[in-house]
Length: 227
Image (cartoon, rainbow, N blue to C red; front, top):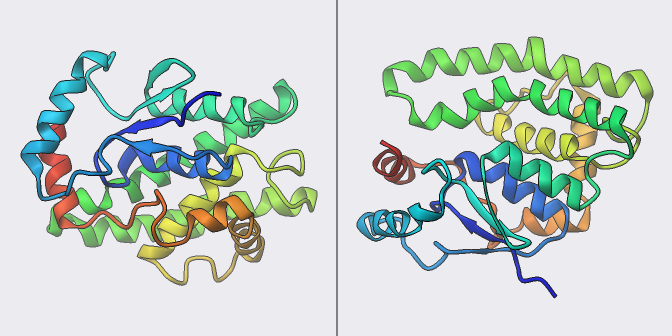
């Protein structure tokens, strides 16, 4: 029996969080090489990343050890997980739609992801952008998809990585704008539907691999690690 996938990253969201969400939705238990490190032990964390650097193809994390491979690059990792755990559609056409929707989330997701790392002077302007793009560009597009076919999920009426990524994005955007979903009933229903899946419900409970909003200490560590 294969061992648990091992996640190599610091104890924050950033580019590992979508991988954590997808593994959780698939019901896969994972381990993290940094579980036993405290965030304030910055030099210990830096030494750890120096230690694994020889395994990093492009000298970048996240890295996931799975099925005898050491995978890097977030998109490659999530695509492998989606294919392995049947979260990637039933045929090439469904995979194309799943990829299209997932890529369509990238712009907004990057803005939300990087928000905690902005200088204070830039945050108000970026928050305005996030609210505007969420309400007027991205969420209407996904609401329209769900309206067009009347099904429970974005593609093929079955859970895919696109649904998981979108649910994650909805949660993260709501942390910055609590009323952002007020005019999107089908997106709210999707979020509830995915959240009530037993594997995801467990992930949303305290003590899981899910990470909180990146706070100032987390931002400081990330800057030291990736500068």
